[in-house]
Length: 233
Image (cartoon, rainbow, N blue to C red; front, side):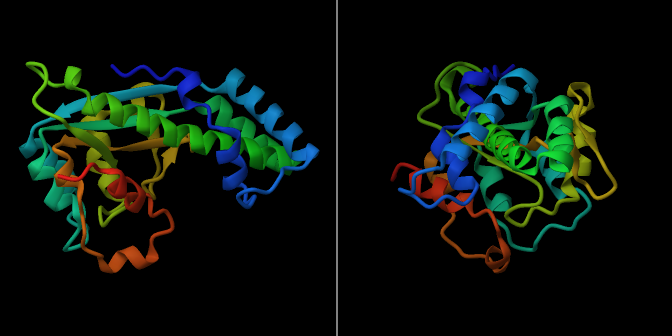
């Protein structure tokens, strides 16, 4: 099981300000600093991080990935996952309490709610990075180290994996046991939750050079940053 200490999930102040639209190098106002301190205090008190992983064979994940058959005809994951050394289905949530507090604040103290929302979103992203480190570690491989591996999280709704893929992922992983539910639109509750597949293998398998038609509509092109960070072969 993966450990998710709050100290590793809590985002840096600069990341929160950037997520809120503060330009690099700009100095936050005293009011912004106060809101961030309050939001971080709420995060530390209310976050209830829980994660779940399930190892997959190539055949098992191929069935999960196919899902309802609505994936893009060409997509990066269809090329990457058959090359993986290890595959793990993954889900994580910060819990219902912090999501309920964000919703309450949006109705009465929008500014503080927006800052706490940004803090929680970045914390969930950090949980994905913690999981990637775990999945790529030699200690995670049965039989010990099998060379230098890099793991990345691929999620339904991104990179051509249709959001309806959540259905098959949930059926296999059963993240209800950690409090995550799926609605009719395949969105997760609590809102500050993430899911997907951790793909671990040689760094080269994650180098996706092609630009796919759906990339132009992507509002979160994190793949470009992580691919650029993959060590050269």
